Image 1 (cartoon, rainbow, N blue to C red):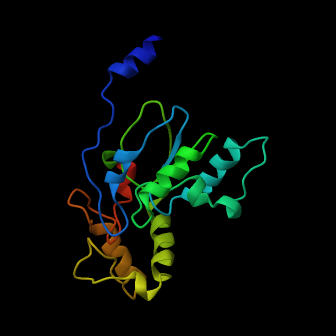
Image 2 (cartoon, rainbow, N blue to C red):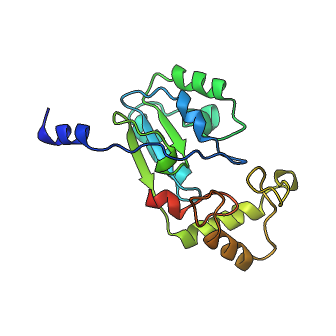
Length: 196
């Protein structure tokens, strides 16, 4: 063991200190994750190059081999978003276990809600918050009406977007959903993700 490896082992590793649960996220699903030593976790805030990074990782995993096409398997099955609600956990875990190649997973959790495994490789991607806001606005505005819940209960359901991008920006950059966040409403913190 080298001196650097010894220092890493004695250093304080990141710990989960927050639970993220809302209409999209359930960070407790990570309690069921069984890491392999060569797993890769693509950790991005939303609208920060997640799919782009997943595609790069997919190409690198299958370098020189027949690459499973995204349409054949689905990038979401090949590199699942672990903490997303609405995706049956048992099916996702079985799909991950069946993968014989190097695995890649996706997360939008900040490090204070994501278990850290020293044997796993993490790729963290950030993006200028102004660009994230514009991309998120386009995504948010494009949602179907049935996606939205009651605006008086934003922790459980997604409220409809405000009619004006300026109102969205003001709300998104100054208000959090979780008590420890100061921005990201009505989703979750973008800057907080990067800060952790």
